[in-house]
Image (cartoon, rainbow, N blue to C red):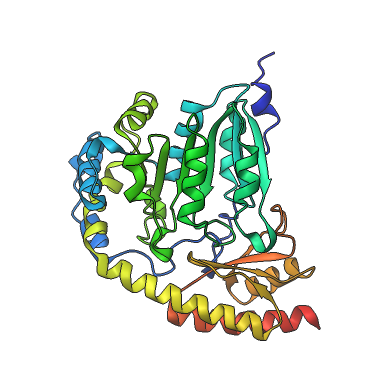
Length: 352
């Protein structure tokens, strides 16, 4: 009888709420403003030839490298950051190796890590979801081959300091250290200037959040020429689709769109945090495009009450350390008027 590897057979799959996409979708941290009009204009110019021919990823890599100020051979475009995580896990992990990460964090890290047969080493965040630098450093062992850190972190929105991140990179020279900067645009902190000093440091960026291209699936890994070269050996040559590549240059060129959206997110975060305080709810300072709010035992009912009011938010009670918490993506100014009204009413309903 055909059977998969044990690590796959026992793997708990990721369950996305993407099936219910009615109303205002603030449950998956997408760009609630959509995408740049320049991208839509570029989409309208695509021809049958553009769709029928295999895409040239290298052209897009030169565009991104120029924008980031690195050499093209230092980065690899991927089918969203998810593919990048898969490539990192498959490249650096084997049975008997250890993958180290802090919880709560992006749920796909342990899924990809465990798929290789590696041992998962979880370190719980400190009080108030502070990054557990001391505990993580203590967990590094000779078998540690991959460390994954979301910064800003998902689902908490919290950040680790540059000093702490570099301490980890320096303490694990035989491990690949991924710093996932998917929400970089909303916080502004990056280790990009430090790449040249650390051959084991790899950064990830995405076009799904600030640029509004989640549906096109486009991410990028950035590191040294040598390490990115190893990833290229395993990566499919046509992993990024032609439509995403056609829109890439326009997305980067329209920084005015990104700047305006980020500005609205920052204002919306403040408004949501203020309302949470008024309602007696605990929330955490966020450097991303979402806010984590602890509703308590009624969190499930709160999420349902929000959905009845046309606003989809994410119940994260099943995530380690997030019991009773809902994650709310920040919308545009107009959308947040609706969200805050719905939130106030939903809390009153669940408390009555």
